Length: 407
Ligand code: C5P
Image 1 (cartoon, protein in one colour):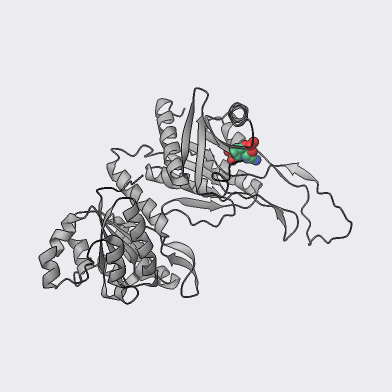
Image 2 (tube, helix red, strand yellow; image 1 turned 60 degrees about the vertical axis):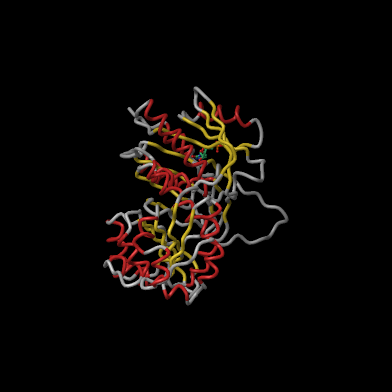
């Protein structure tokens, strides 16, 4: 479904190697129905040609402030007023600095000064440049001025270094843009003033210093819920197991490894939480003893004695002033009846049932389809991206707590 139809987006491209990803971004914004006009700085044109963006956006590319022909077609003030959103991706360190200081010496910076539309920027630069106090101060100033900074992500960089400064992927940027528009349309933030704590990912249970028992959970559903909770105005805290996902901007993250660590962190946080959502695939058992040295192979078979891990969500749900507590039930059979059993046995307010036999949804997939079950009703959420499912779950939780406030 085209979720950006009739939305007019100026896509500003500044000089950086990530500019090549903006070709894909243009395509994806168009796929969602947006009308995209690309504005390039001189630096951007060193990396990718305007012709590429003209072909992908279906509109002429603007690159000059003082071009008579361009001004006659759509002047810079007219362009600034045309936009519903100015999205700068990639936003170089230099551009962030010029935006912070209100420069107007090229078309893109001038548009940013002249527009009434919200501005979002996806920083992309070397990790040291991002970490530099000058860039950090600029980023802070921009955020205080309600300019939306999307990312950066963290990981391997084109320069060969590793750290924060990667431009978010085009799909992540499209999701962020959708959220910006839906937030602007939302009359009120449904969870403002609430604290939401979410467990996510797998846990690792050590056998010896180098081996562990774990599972395939990617953490994507929990991270999507943390983003959706934040977008709904909540304070959002993620208690993450070992996953390779970057922390959504504005979400507080606590890293844990084992079920016991996740249990401790959850109980620390749950007392002050209004909502607790357990998406983590916690290992049910851990090795009874952890060998101090690497276990050597000797006999043909070996037995590992396991001991039960604490049930985190059940522990939270048995607190005297428990938060609104939500669990997940990943099942291979009798989905609804097992989920209902867990709702009751763990004293949950809501359980999200997931059929994990389907390869197109659930574990490790970007898609999900679930049934939301409370004591009173069932609600099926059709197959969609985990982001879209997360938003719907957060909406259901928000409605449920407004009907039955904590305490
Ligand atoms: O009992 P089962 O593992 O199927 O329950 C799944 C739900 O319980 C999920 O919400 C999961 O995060 C939570 N859980 C937990 N601690 C455990 C096991 C499961 O919080 N030790």
